[in-house]
Image 1 (cartoon, protein in one colour):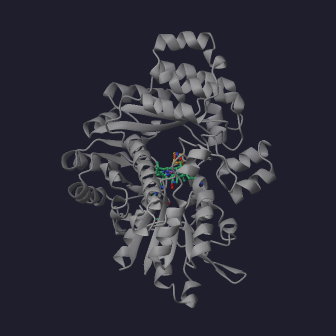
Image 2: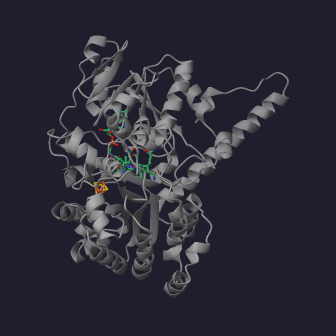
Image 3: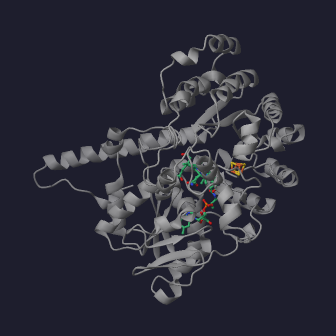
Length: 515
Ligand code: B12
Ligand code: SF4
């Protein structure tokens, strides 16, 4: 069988894992990559997005390759995109469409209602998708596939969720070729995940939903691959793709010290490539930091979220203290590891005082860069109930979150637009780039009150100001994505115009030349 995956603007590990499982069983998998220009987290402009829109090319490509199944990996943020694309595909081709990923897993009954969604997979998808593809022509067998929801006329068949894969080493390595053949510049930075799940359960994160509801009683939630298994993947990929940097996309890469020491000892010797990872201040100490440094960690991303310890404990279910955060930043800075602190705005009970203390705190501790995102309530996460209890959301708002088609991203102001924080957000983002003394003065005169609301533009500007771009493959790929796909579109328009000028030919889409 031939399965076409469609990906939105970034390399997607879930697609790589699913494709590997299908290819191992002898199926053919290909990819359509939607660059989503001017419609992503950092850049949004309706007119430019319309000009550089690739929907038509994607639909044409799918129509010409006539797959047996189209598969989309869907988070809440790209759900409107996924539904709109699925509708357009259905207009030109009678092909079954399957949705999987975080959003369909969170609110399956809303997603399956959509006429263009034929199947959806809840939770981990390797086995369910393979069973579905193996049984695309057998409707009886399809009715009993664990984790699969499907339509049978007006009836919706909802199969049980099976236990989590406990031994991650049994999974085939992700299929990188599916992305790299289509978008070659992605291979400069290798993304890899060594675990599934998280040891924590923050209320705003999908792990709160997965751990307590969907996967309750279905096996250990936090699982980790063996160090040897991860190293085999990295070694083989290094020989094949010659990547320049590695991203560990684990929720908290450093959560198991014993595993970390065992793994990084070999990584340092056998891979020795600069890497980025996500950390948590609770697991940081001198030993861990010097190990990270010796093993070529160049950048660590740390969730801080708020500096109001009470709010963190009661509203976010996060226990780390400000002293721990401070110490982590100090140790990382001393070791020469760049540290990015992620924070949230518009949290229930959050006051301006929290943001003002962030100004002082980050001016003292000087992380390398900050990110400040407005809270977006993801469907069925614990914080939604907290917001309901505080009357910040109404039952109608929650219904809207479940439907998922009108949500505003966290860059554009989150679910509840907290305009009072927007000026402070703009200034806070610049704090790491301005001299400490100047900041002190600017804070005293309350400069933030005079700033315009720059919204998402500030993030892009501070990213451009960042001098440490050598290994920042995210930023490099971001620019290459815009350059490559804008030039390709402009080239196509020129070509069609030129054809139009030649009397014998009419403008049209040459399907073979599409991305
Ligand atoms: C690594 C990561 C990223 C990476 C890579 C993203 C990617 N798409 O691979 C980067 C940094 C690029 C990223 C970006 C974003 N991310 Co992110 N990310 C993660 C993280 C930490 C791990 C995801 C991962 O790769 N897991 C490993 C794979 C193998 O597991 P998986 O994705 O769950 O896939 C399995 C199943 O879900 C299922 N499945 C998935 N897709 C499909 C499709 C089909 C057809 C089928 C059958 C099954 C299936 O099968 C897979 C294999 O078992 C998760 C947290 C988490 N716990 O999931 C957040 C998470 C997915 N991200 C999140 C968000 C919000 C984003 C962004 C919107 C943020 C932004 N700055 O814009 C973007 C969206 C990008 C996009 N278009 O997907 C949220 C989504 C919340 C929600 N309800 O939608 C999560 C859950 C974190 C959170 N806050 O709770 N992310
Ligand atoms: S530590 Fe991070 S990944 Fe883990 S539950 Fe909290 S927010 Fe989610």
